[in-house]
Length: 404
Image (cartoon, rainbow, N blue to C red; front, side, top):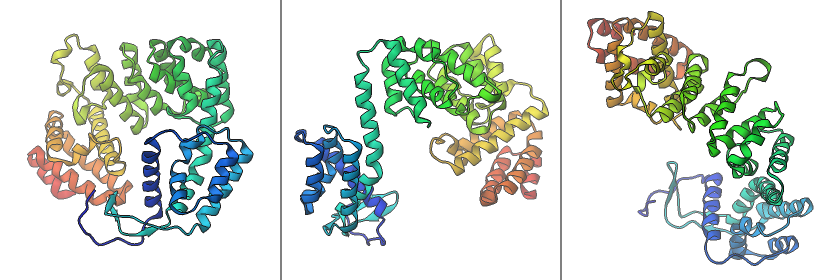
């Protein structure tokens, strides 16, 4: 955050302001004593009656307030209707003081309709928040049931939703809370529903019971009609387990899955084994197989493996996959960004030299293919490949650089 004067950027993004208001709401609601318990009717009446800054404070604290309210569908509809009225008509404006920079966009000194923005954000998020709150209350009501019945009810509820759930969803957290004692009942649940299987995978990855590894490996090995589509999630989950069967299952993924899934498998292998074979070789199945079969793993080096021309070609293909993935999707690929930096390119160059001079023609071939497939990255691809070729310091590489 900067406080010095800068020109104010216009137009001001409503979504940015809404995000700031929501962040402020969280901070304000976390301070002080818990608000008094109110009925649904009182909450709706307060939205009708409050004005100006009083309404601003009330809107900011609304999610926490609703935690204490039994909100029926009818009351939720009325509440959303009041929020829509505020969003469309509330006249109150408030000046954003100072200077705030969010994702490179600066805002400051502007008057904004804070109540309208807060009401708009609440209308978008409240229905899902209410659904999750109701699910949490429902989960609490199951605590006295026998463990098997409790597990079955949660999984049946997941199946009824007909949508994939991530690890933060209340129902998945409900499975997590069952702990190791609930694992046998999850594994025995008779369902081929992918949303159920995904939820079980997410729960097993948190519980980290060894029996969960067999279930996840089984999903990765299932083919045909019942093949598990969320393979990247299953691979990430295996990073929380250990043992040779886990390692071999992840190596199998490296052999034939699409690049994003193979990338997750390489990361999982590093998490399971503590080994990392560099930017060029860490995603290579042959490297991991050779390491696994080496009696003295302390002296293992991927540069010592004998590779066929096709195997070298696969290594180069994966190198270009990593580079493009890092350029297109930055999040989660911090390591891959080293491919554009001096230190990272130096490491890759050293490994490339171990493959011999055939890599020169392989790199030129891959560069041309990728430029044709990715015209927006054509210039970057060309410059990056030329830098790598020059770093090899071979006459053949220098000639190839000029040919691109």
